[in-house]
Length: 304
Image 1 (cartoon, rainbow, N blue to C red):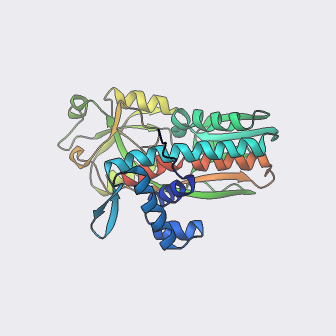
Image 2: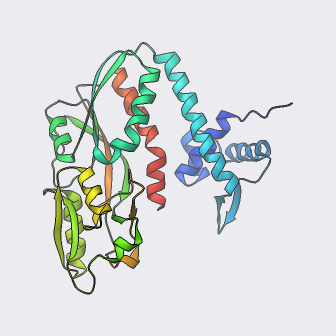
Image 3: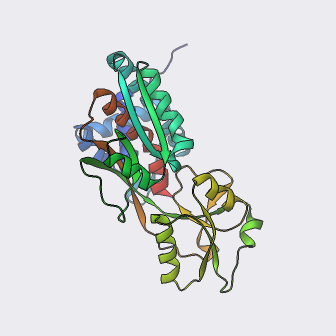
């Protein structure tokens, strides 16, 4: 039986083009000509034995087979990059102090730490899940080497810390996935019950400002110091909250315009911080893995 071997170089062009939203941009990003990338995509369809693109206006969209291939391509590239890293960087050592938002902790942290540990078993990571203000404070005092935070206009950037902009992530109203609980939320001029972190909180400020602009009354129904507390209160129908769709539990959902809440919501920047005094190879590699692991959820969030 003759096996078809997908070309990883071709898959990388395919994935890059989908994520950048343009194969011309992918060609520029990868240092190739547009015609070379087009030839690669033709080769990929030949290898797949089916169409992976369809016409969508002036551009292209993925077919169902293309969506399936995209998921496998990402996994193959991640495994390839992990293998190369393990072979070339297995001697990385040292301790890395890593901070991350609670939103990313449950869904992405196991993948990120697992990939790093498999490739670099001699390095050690100390991880802190916390709120934005605490992470920024610890970055400023050099208690963390690396962290992912929301871009917070209410908090000054830590001195001596560089922030790499990863994406602008849309904010969403979040409520229970159970339709019967959504129907019980106050309507017809009654204050909207909000489930929020204690102030100061950039999402709390964005929620109240959006409601005020729309002339919709609101009240703080539940205040929590943890993300799990927000999720529990929203799941029980005690109110709605404002977050992003990153790390959203299955028992919660992003509410659409039928909920009667303002749809004109801001985006929030997601930043990758490194303290300038700590740029060890192990720290840099963990930063690379975090960036790679965030590609898919960020692309999904922008498309929602």
